[in-house]
Every structure is written in C-alpha cells, then in structure tokens.
Length: 104
Image (tube, rainbow, N blue to C red; front, side, top):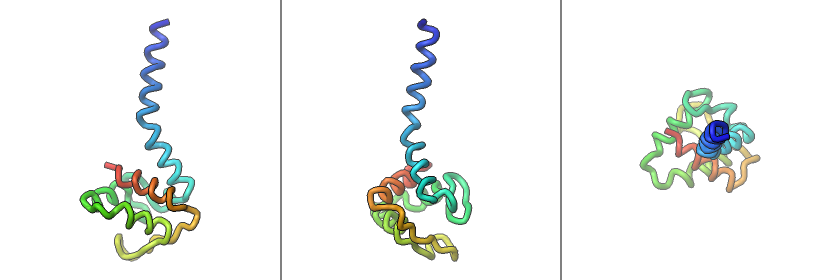
C-alpha cells in the first residue's frame, strides 16, 4: 500500500505546483493570446519571457500592459500592432499580465 501511495502523493504535489501556470496559460489560450504569442519564442508578437524581461524593473508595467491587452497598442515591439481584445475584461487582463510578467 505504501509503495502505491507515496508515488501518487508525489504526483499530486507536482501537479499542484504547476497548476497556476497551466491555468493562466489556459486563459491566454482561451482569449486567443497564444495565436500571436508563445511563452518562449517570438511568433507574430514577442515571447512572453521577453516581455517579462523587458518590463522586469518597471513598477508600472502591470497596469500599462493590462490596458494594452484590452485596447491594443503599437510601436513597443516593432511595426506589427497588437490588436484590441474586447473579449478580455479588466480582471482577466490583470491575471494574464501577472502571469506573463512571472515568466522567466
């Protein structure tokens, strides 16, 4: 019994440790962010890891980026503009930005 229970507990703990990352990536996927972005490579838009690195020391980044998620923007990463995403509400935008800024 102990041989079966211990690996099951380890697996459950590992899943709980990564669950928030998957939940926020799931939100990013459901809001079509992943159509233009990836966590670790540039697609149409910058990699989320690059966004996190760029804004690492900017204390106002979370608020600015949450607005950009909803309203769109241009010029920060080149000529291709980021379109507005009206399907994202304020709370979701803040959650998405917090997740993006946590990428390493």
